[in-house]
Length: 211
Image (cartoon, rainbow, N blue to C red; front, top):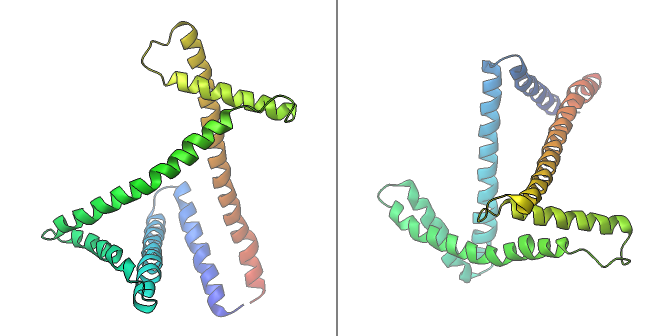
């Protein structure tokens, strides 16, 4: 392992310990590591997006491959940068309006297809006997959950009587969904914590032994 790899691992270890120092209390080491993370992430994404959009999707096709039909889109993108000045920021509104309208027209059909039609198809239970009994039972539970949740968000009538009891079932399904999402988030954070511990107590000592 070269010397720069050792330096990089030591920097990562110091920054990891600085982030963990927040568990004791807020301190300058944590704030410095936090600001460094935000600054490096912002710089990385700016360079990445600039290369992916301006260089690869505009400069290379237009000036090297001769795809001049991309030139109007590039000009609209450059007009958005005029928003940085108060005198010319009104010009950027035309580019932003065109971008919002075009992107909405592009997304609306795909959103309807993915988030409405496919979900409606997923709530329709299959015919009995065509799938295993546990899959059929799961489909019925999903159908009951979707209907009860939709009734819970139906506010045009008071939730009393049968409507109120069904909405209570919808609340139960919502709580189960929120709990599962929260558990998934916690497990993801715990896996990140385990990865940092493995770096500090396994990878870093091994690198020191190989020096």
